[in-house]
Structure formats: structure tokens, C-alpha cells
Image (tube, rainbow, N blue to C red; front, side, top):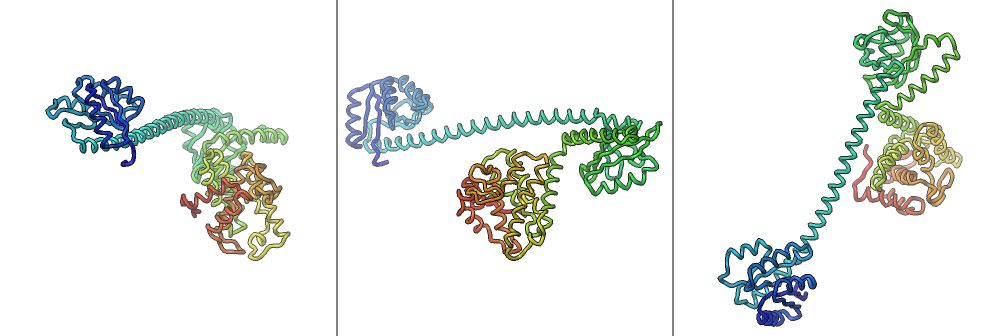
Length: 500
């Protein structure tokens, strides 16, 4: 502050006063730039041009002019940071001083002017300007931040309302499909009692909706099918699906045959799709064709079920567990790899769809190991060249298993590529650089880090730091540099750890 040269504008109707003041300031503060004006208009023009550290206004000029100058300066955004120091008489109007303060005056200097007080006031005013500039900058940043966040929140609210409306429409449409579906659809609890049924189901049983809800599956099965049907239902409690044909009863009508496809929604709820196949029972070919149509129809309806997402995740988890059952040392490996891979993808700002695909692929990327002998997977010593080739085959095995499932193409591809490396040293195809999709590069880093942090039959866990050192050493060589940087950041700055 002591070394910086000040810029001052003085407004006074008296030219003599201006000369005297300029002389006083120049003597006390050598190097100070002093610009003078004899009226408010000139003073404002000088302020526009020079952006001074302080403006001094002698109130021996008209009160109206002094107030006007103050109001204009505080109104103009580019001038409002400039402090104003008013020079007044000792016996000045107290009420007018209050008006000046409200208009933006920062301080007063009483005549006759004391040189030391003047210098001190000028330096204080300069500091006030610096503070005002800082405050204004912070205010502008805050306003911009608030405006940006408000816009984001408005957008999020609009999107959420849109999604909620779409969800309601989908639910209403799906309920309509179920109610009016041309097949019988039944919901049964674990005791075998009907808890819901659609219109066609009521028609097939020859009963009203309420009458059906008063029955159990034992009331629907024919006498000769009762034992088989109840046995199948008890077994259905332990499995996810049931497909069978039964002879059933209809109120005030003859017994008839149905084809039933059942699926478990949860431990206390089962969904059954039924169709009358009486006429088809006598013709094998006709039965085959109609069964295919039933299968297609039930699959289409299953896709529209509001539990599809949960069931898909259950299926993926089951596939993952199956793959790890042969290798006790890697139990939970795919789940932990999925946790890290999703965290990396999220830190990289990838879309939720991409993160979801990475989660699926990571959870089942080693499913092909079910075809590898357990004695190789759990071998405590060094494996032979032939055994290593067999281990490598799990990638193709995994690919062959998942390619026949209706997964997104990215999921299938990332499983196929997760042992490829940027420099072409990976397998099965020795892909290089951008031939390897981003999802695979993320999965590769996550797979290596988790494996090095876990126990294996042939070694103890190496620890996080060793794993991070390994991927860092091969950053941009075997592993994507951007993926490695984010992975290291997660462990060292974000506190990531593998949850059990």
C-alpha cells in the first residue's frame, strides 16, 4: 500500500482551492496523480477516464450537485467501488450529512484540512476501494453461481416432472395391457391364494374378480391334476420359473387344459400367465405352433413388467456368483471390480447409461471361468504354458456365454476386451490404442487393481500401493492414462476402498 501511487479526483468550484489542494497532496504524497474539476459533470468525466482511488468533493458547492454526483457514482456499476470523501465545514448541516451518507458518502473531512488527517484518509479510502473491488468480484461470482445452480435445479425439476409423468403414463398403460391382455394373468401368494387376476383370467375360471380372490390354486386344479399341481407349486417356491400344463376346472363348465408360465416376483408373490390349450391337446403340430406364440407373448409381457430391472440385476448377480463358485479365492472379485469401475466412470463424468453398462459387464466379466478346471483356478504353484492358455480361454468363454443374451453391445464388447492392453500385449486379439473401447479400458484397470489387492492361491494380497504403482508405471503403455489418473485419485484423494 505504501509503494502504490494513488489517483485522486478533486471537485471544487474554487480554482484556488483546487490548486492549493493539489499542491498539498503532491507534497505529502509524491507521485500521486491529482485530477481536478470545478463541477460535478467534469468530475464524472474524469472518473470515467481515470478510475481514481478516491473522489474528494468540497461541499462549499451546491448541495444538490454534491448529492447528484454521489448518487450517480454509486449507481454506475463500474464506478460504485470508488470511495467518496466529502470536505465539509465544521458547522455543516447535520441533516445534509445524513443525506450524503445514504447517497453513498464514505467519510467526511472537516475544514480547515489537517495534512496528516488528509493523508491518512486518502490511504484509508484507497484500501476501501480495494476492498470494494474484492467484494464486488465475490458478489458477481456468487450471483453467477446462484444463477447457474438455479438454472440447473429448474432443469432437474422439469426433467424429474417429465420422467414422473412418463412413468405414470407407462404404469397406466401397462396396467391397461395387463387388464385387457388376451391371456389369463394371475398373481398368487406363497400360500397359493389368488391376490389379483385380469379380465381374461376371470373369464377362464367362469367367476367374478371377487370370487377368484376367495379361491386358492387347489380350487382351480382338476381332481386328477391336484397332486401334481400342488407339488409343482411347492417346488416353484424354491425356483424362479415354472412352465407346465394342467387340467383345470371352470365354474358351471367342463374341465379344460391350460398352459401355464409362472415367474417369482419375490418370496411371497408369483405371476402366472395362462392360456386355454384344450383344442391344441389333440394335435401335436397345432400345440407346437400355439406354444411358440404363447412363449413370444409371455416374453413380451415380461419385458414390460415393472420388476424387469430388479430381475435383471438378480440374474446378473446369479451369473456372477455361479462363475465364482469354482474359484474360492476370487469370490466377490467381480462385485468389487464393478464397484471400482463404476466409481472411475462416475468420476470421469460418464453418463448413467454407460455406468450401468459398466456395472453389468464388470459383474460377469469372468463368467467364462466356469469352463476352466478348478485345479487350475486354485493351483497354489506356478502354472504351465498349457494351463495359462486354458486360463486365457475364459475371455472367449465369457464372450460366447453373454453374446446370446440381450445385453447392450457395449457390455458384450467390454467383456471380450477386458484383457486387451494399449500396446497390443493383451489377449485374445492383441488390440491396440483406440481399438479398445473406453469401457474395456476402465474394466482392465479395475480388474488389475482388485486382483493385486486380493489373496490368490499362489500369493498373498499385495496391497493398494503396489497395485497403484503397477498401473502408474504402465500408464499410457498398457493402461489408459486418463483411467489410471482417476483410479489413483479415487484411492488417494477420495478415500475409495473395496467394501465387503
